[in-house]
Image (cartoon, rainbow, N blue to C red):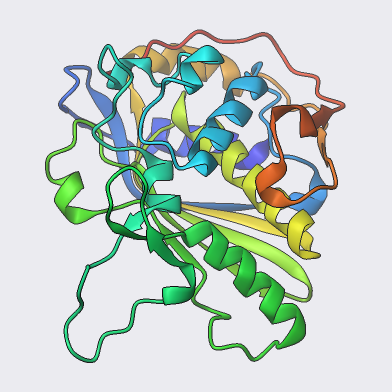
Length: 287
């Protein structure tokens, strides 16, 4: 996919050397943006083999709202480096996607969207379901294109109090949706992006989420747009990425999603069709 390869080339040519908490230096640039048209095919990289199944399991873990990886571990080990021996995490994306904490009692004049608020079984706290809010809003737009929430379909995985203490606060921390000409578009903002390992998964994950939401609410998939605040390449990834730049992208695959209610979808209901790629490139994880 040319947009990804252009990102790699840009950082290799313009990145500034920067040490970081992992002890492995990076080449880093500030504020990179790209977008892809989902009508052109599903943006799963073909210049290296991508582990699509792991990505799908990860997305369903996000959507589950779980705050641990005990169930995710049965299918993939990609989060093991950041969890304790019992599978607990200091920050879990789905916890805030589906169960974002709201005040028990707000300040006078505040309103808190009671329609999407419930009492959390795990904590006894009031929480807000951001994904359900997006689905309901998308369905409302079909009936009333002037709905006040048209430009308010924002999902946040960033809680400042949690992020200040977490071992790994969310990298891809907020995303929002926009409907244009019956097409559903998604924009993801990412504070930190590991170009070799993380970005290909983020691109595919949020594109799949966009296609799933479009399928549920009766829209066509539109564009996926991505802003990376700190886009970086680890020193030990440079050679592998240079090899990847020599590979000519193959045709993009497509996604087939079973017709059933959104929250009843499971791993077996997402089919990847027509995927061909070059061999995998091994990149070490910087923890």
